[in-house]
Image (cartoon, rainbow, N blue to C red):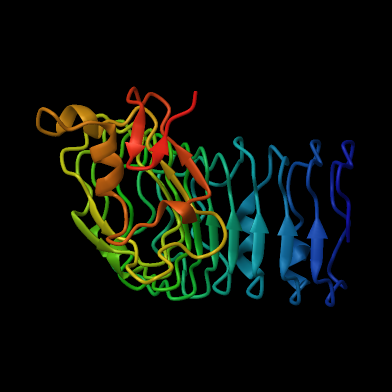
Amino acid sequence: MNLWYSNNLKEIPDLSLAINLEELNLSECESLVTLPSSIQNAIKLRTLYCSGVLLIDLKSLEGMCNLEYLSVDCSRMEGTQGIVYFPSKLRFLLWNNCPLKRLHSNFKVEYLVKLRMENSDLEKLWDGTQPLGRLKQMFLRGSKYLKEIPDLSLAINLEEVDICKCESLVTFPSSMQNAIKLIYLDISDCKKLESFPTDLNLESLEYLNLTGCPNLRNFPAIKMGCSDVDFPEGRNEIVVEDCFWNKNLPAGLDYLDCLTRCMPCEFRPEQLTFLNVRGYKHEKLWEGIQVHC
């Protein structure tokens, strides 16, 4: 059932007999106030889009045990602060601008593949070590109150992490070293970040952005692979814009030192597809490579 952009829709009809309903799209139904309790009879419902529905009560989710994809991208939602239930088989949760301070302790992550909660009010996600073996993407960009990243010890299939502009974040978990399939890591503009693991074996990493973190105290020694082909095909980027390490390293070390310190041990510059060194003031990056402005 696709009711996308039905701006004047104020209520959903009785769904008591919609036992075979698998997908419901209510995105941008701006006048919708709540979901009917009869939606709990849609026992085969797997996908629910509610993006842009500003005033919706999520308590009706309690009976939707087979829901796998939930999109509730909005900021003013009634009933969310007291929500104590999320479907146990949830695979994709997209909840930008989430008003919660943390997810409830009953939130199940066993089947979670993608978590997108950008610009949220979250201070933390959950406690302890959770079974995150299926998780591939975690996007928390702009969650300015987020104080800690959860334990990622079991997130062995994690591929992308974006915590850009999480301004309250002070430390980054050492458990990230278990994310051996990580490809993309953006920690830029985490202005309070002080601690970053000093020894990470991330051989699959293709993109790393640590710019805009002026309080970082230690330089990460990241092993990004030392084979003949140091960077796999695809997006191979290193960002050293306004490198903050320049002021934290001993006298005489400059942008080039910052760059070479995050290179793989057998780095071959001819394999690099994108390099951002805006702010670099020298004429040469390394032997044989000239800077052209």
